[in-house]
Amino acid sequence: MPEPSLEQIAREARENAHAPYSGFRVGAAVRCASGRAFAGCNVENAAYPEGTCAEAGAIAAMVAAGEREIAEVLIIADSPAPVPPCGGCRQKLAEFAGPDVPVIMATTAGKAVSARLKDLLPGAFAARHMEDD
Ligand code: THU
Image (cartoon, rainbow, N blue to C red):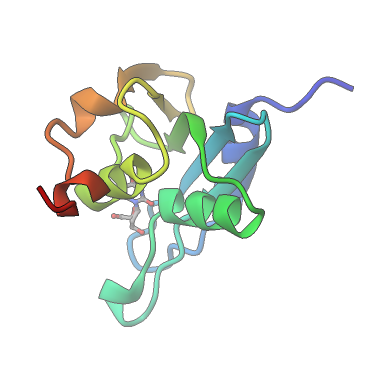
């Protein structure tokens, strides 16, 4: 059987999103350099700031499985235009994805745009900024 696409697994995770406050369900999936893929969905909380984004869930699943290197990202939501990752998630992705990694932003209706992480987060803060000179 062929591997499910990144979009399929993100779409499936989105179905499980816990978004009773915003009503806005998001799914995300990351493909690793190894070929393994991990998905996440947004998980909101009655204490609103405690909610987490779909991208954070996918990254947590990836790290828990022992992976560290993201090769591709896909985010999907039921929105009129493809939803870009929030600022915090751009930084979270940059921890495990290089500047040229494609971030595909898709809608459930079938629109999609792709951008490289470096264009979504120019001048990213990284571990090297904490090195001694
Ligand atoms: N959200 C994500 O999960 N990922 C994004 O890239 C944008 C926003 C979630 C957070 C919150 O649960 C809901 O969408 C509305 O902001």
